[in-house]
Image (cartoon, rainbow, N blue to C red; front, side, top):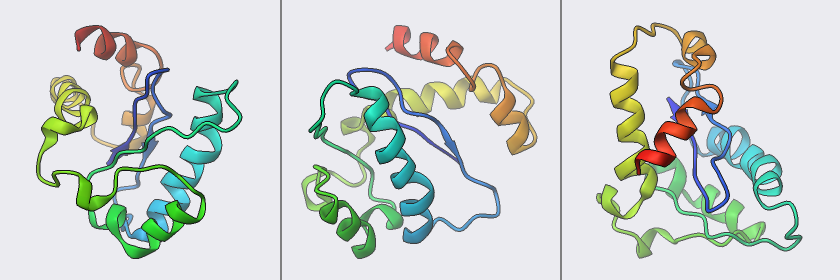
Length: 137
């Protein structure tokens, strides 16, 4: 599994999840959200000290758990609350309707058998997928 995001500035760092990992709230907070908030937000918005982008995620159990919501609230992260989004609609999330679909199509044409191959693939790792994806949509 891969986690990633987009903003008006650029893309986030892709975060790869080990095939055997259980994505619970603890994993999601420690391996996805904390690096995203401490690395990606300052990188994407370096000149804005009090940057408060609006964070949108889908309704995966680890995204809507009490622990995750509490974590986001404690850090004063602005986010679309679970009761404010249409949980089964990919149409309202750009990552859902555009980016992931495009990446899946590209990856289905490749022979990638391990997570390491995926991480090292030139299409996923670097600017190539960014250019294709951003210019296509």
